[in-house]
Length: 333
Image 1 (cartoon, helix red, strand yellow):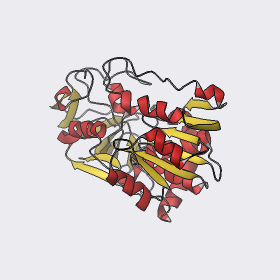
Image 2: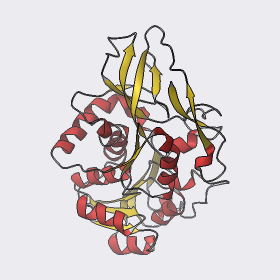
Image 3: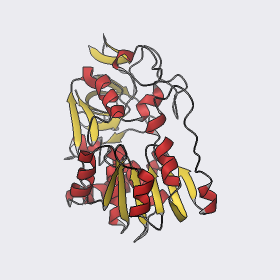
């Protein structure tokens, strides 16, 4: 049987565990060119929340009664396509919240074979789409230069923590923004950030004025909303604002808060740009190789917060938005 966690009702405002239910169905039969993945780990990412709405985001919304869409990593246990999906090999894919997932030939979004010897947990974090997102956002969109000030929100999150470390490697001064003393201590003491602002206990605008008196050259934003508005006021001349995520607004039941300081983009001749990692997937191989090299050398650190059992996937998603985790949230099946 295939155990699944499905969408039982659409969330209104903050997502809750009551939006989901666990079901069992028969393991799907394979067709020509298909393979069956036994899912080992699920990645819990903010984009899942957008898929729970009927409108979806960059993909259609999950239907009521359908397994919740999410990234995952699994191993091929049956194949009608041994050239593309060899038996026993691990792959990263949009598996969904289920124990077994059918993959077709050349699917979209793409499926990625996990290199031999790579930890499956790392594929959902530092060496997978999380690491690639940080890599693309920093090196291809933001492009920080030596001695520039690079500020990153959700600095203790999976993407934010890696983005800040990559910016530091480029010679930038890195300021994180996080939501607890523990998270701020981790990004400074372990990850090597130059400073971190606790947005729940400190005045972000005042601290940025103190830490970056000439302004912020790059803001890598994972949060949006009021935090984005506060940093817009502190931009340097010709700054770059990179929009990676908008987690503060994903659970809103109504319009997002207005950006009162967007006028500073014009005065500072700054640019604000969003990006999607899928637009840069042709760079996956080179990016993954570089990330693996940094990781092996100890230059790129990360943490995983792991919950056991597919039934805990809803709890994990709620934790993601409440901030009750440190690093990459995953569910082990």
